Length: 102
Image (cartoon, rainbow, N blue to C red; front, side, top):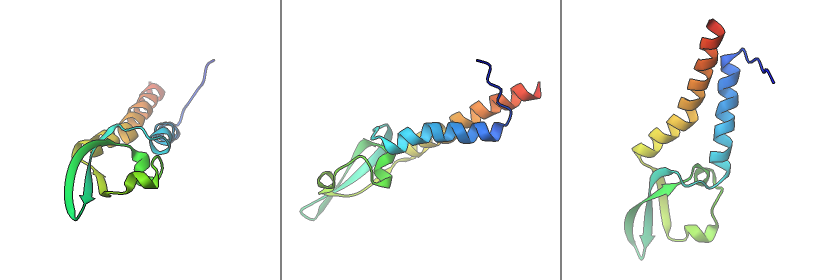
């Protein structure tokens, strides 16, 4: 099968969607984050791997969030998310651009 892809922007958008869909739809705990627990008026912060699906409300039950006040990604989590969501599609589309150029 000889597939000819010529537009790097369309390759970037396609590969971004291909990578983003599983990360946002399935609870894949991959990204470093912190969870703030509030138990009896005291707050505790604990490090835990988080999924991007948690931020759009998928992948957890309401009962799982009983004592959780907030959760967020750390700087390492944001960097990993940027590398996966933007870096890999950029490298793929850059490869297409270079192949098209020569």
